[in-house]
Length: 291
Image (cartoon, rainbow, N blue to C red; front, side):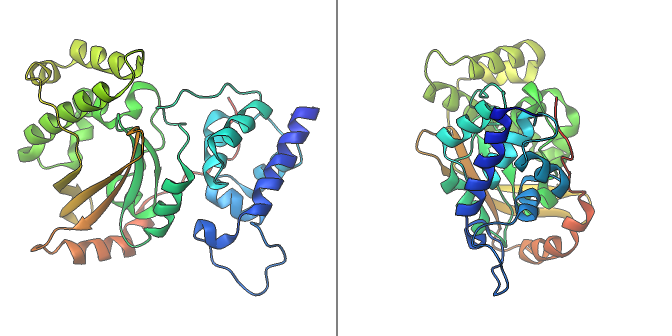
């Protein structure tokens, strides 16, 4: 990766890194810091990259960064939508269509997510594509960052992949299916009529899942604004939680956070999860995610 544009990419990354204070992204501040902004190793940590790989990017060297890496950098550096688009331009990558796993997350959503350090939380799209998770959400729900295409949507996996249902007790599957279908209908109705992402997903599910087709014919419509859920963790067992949603202004993204359900032992279980859960989750490192 050696051109004037890639050199500008490195310069742009440095300029965005310099403007962010550690406290802005949930990192500790100390008296011995030599720079007011983030260090290179801190950006690498936030983006899930190796320090050597990120250093290469700032030098304008190395290989072309992947869409996944660019999305991670945009989130780590709290880029605006315009800045994110410019980053993709400098990397010679097409700007991703909003709605997929590389969708731009509003910096305000990320700021709130950073502040939710003691409870599982994540940002998803209206089609239930997980965009970013905090460590406790990974520990509770598993790492959702590796899914691509149609399978990036948990709703799609729910109706096409039996393994996706292991997160919920079998007795709750029917209720979850109905809630997912009603939520999908509401999300599709809120989108522009020319938007094909939701309609393509619905068509695919109608063709592949008899259960989905039956529920879709009921015409239920309801956003999932708050739920009481029972979740199965592979180590600590059944956890009953409240799932709360904060919607973005356009409704295309949601910040979800999970709190212990009153009258249960879930508070103790979530505390236990904060101790042992993240130790069981391997953190992915995007050493060189090009192509």
